[in-house]
Length: 480
Figure 1: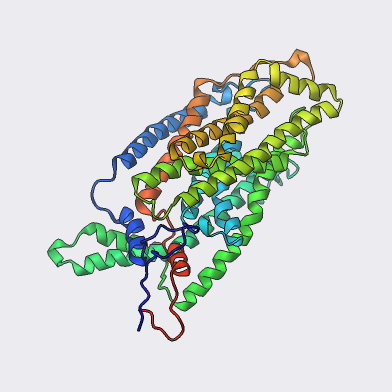
Figure 2: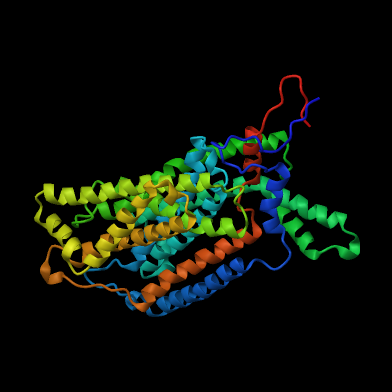
């Protein structure tokens, strides 16, 4: 009888979703050995965790000082009552969009190349939303009474004002966070059970004097997290059904969350904010900077943990293509803002655009054009999309440009409104920058812990993809 080798040596070069030579065992070992390692973590991990811890301490100091002194330590004033807090909120929410887009929408569209990066992107979504959620809480000035924003019955008869965009943000972010967390956790169940079984096997196979307490702790911890997963047919049936339902539920949230965030601006009458193009413009911008952040993180992690066989150049290039398309949509939004200001004949709209182009904050506007429009045009070239160093630099520029875009939308529109007598200037203080940089610490520490204790790639889906790509036995032949 002919034997079908469980390898991917015969895969077509047109389908490099998994590098040739991978087997079921090699996929399991490559991903789970990162989690199971007992020796000292790589220097890269230690550096990321160390830098993240320092920035996290900066965040705790900034938040503590803010609670003691109040928002007056920020640079906000009249007329610029929205500053770094809202800028960073919108930016971090945008970062979090790539994970659900990769996991949910590409799953429904049956895009196989999502498999190697979906879990990593989902984790990035959760950590970015943690960073984003703190800014509206701190920006209200009295975070200890923030529970008034939830519809909790009380004897005072006070209820949230649902006509306020602030309330829309509360429910949008909380819904997105909840669905994304459940979606991420459900996808982890089979791999958590694998880690549990590996820890049990090491504990059981070792003679009693050589048994390690770490393996016992891992077995208990991963066993509790796997909630009794045994890989039975019933478990797999419920898993597939739940995963698909959650993907369908998360898909409209990808669009609705940043649409609602854009309504914070669009429902106002302020020039530069009052525009119907904002919802699709904000969603495209979120996908743009989200995919850029995935590339910024994935390129070095792929190299350090030797994941080139699972995260191939096919994945990198596809992400670059999505980033290019989203960038062109964002560029179209910039053109529409210019067109609306000219075509409307509105004096205030025209002045707003003139102020962006030549006013006190003109360097920020032209820098965002450079970062978001001009530099990403390099992605039309295949040799740029496949050059990891250049692609990494382009992705960093995109993230910088998207932050500058939020800065221009918030600050430049506010600092000169309808009345010249109320014009003013805004500049972020040390505490503004400390709070912003501190959120990177929260993000990096969470990301480092995720890489250390949870599998960053969905092993089950990778094996399923490997099975679909390997040669199948002819009729009447056996496969061992």
